Image (cartoon, rainbow, N blue to C red; front, side):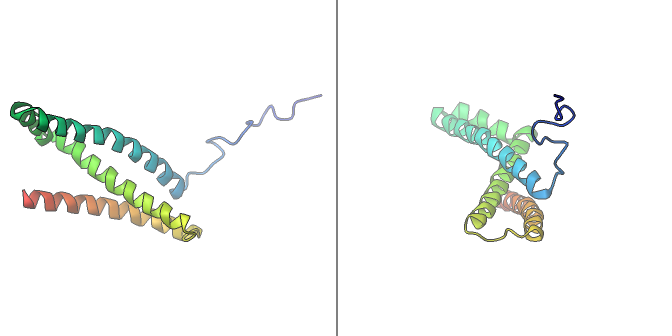
Length: 130
């Protein structure tokens, strides 16, 4: 008896699916969750530096003030805000709202733009207060 599944994948795979905005946002949500883990370790490092003494704290603050440090902090801020908005979107879905395809696509686009705008706003306010 011939195996009729030889030319087909055993289960759906990447070449079967078309990447849609909600699928991409799910992937980004998971990535930002991982980024928050490492960013929180950075915050813990900064707090440990503050508790360790003035010299170590000054060094940690110097690093956070470099271009690389600020890029990391900016990315952490965006990941935090973007992940929060994704969590609010999931909370809305848990309540049973917003499952229409056109609405979910708009919500993905809006949450991406809002996360970028809020990140820039937080940084502008932070730099003005500083």
